[in-house]
Length: 144
Image (cartoon, rainbow, N blue to C red):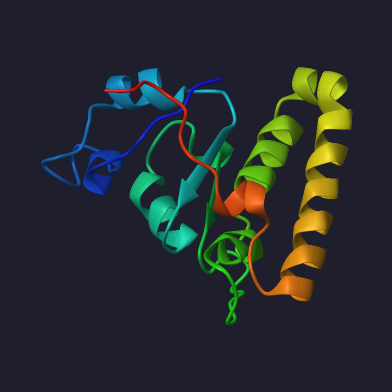
């Protein structure tokens, strides 16, 4: 499993379509030629599909984004990601579902993720704010 941060969307296109595009070999080395890819995009998913439609693994790339469910309302920032299935719970569950050996071993994790989403929904509807574990979360990675 890997995480890729795409900074230049034009790099996703085929080299014949854009000068910033990465080669097919480079694209396949990053996104693979035959493995499932879960792509989180803070925009319309069809845009990513249009950019990558000539790439080898196009059919195996599953994009979550705004407009994916076309959900939105006045709510919390995190709840907006939940409504559009861009939150950590939906992305993790989708990754588990797309890798057969993970699904065989991690079905209980998917249930835990669904339970967290139900708890989140109940809390936001009752309080109008995100749960403390969401609102107060801070990155614990490398400190500089």
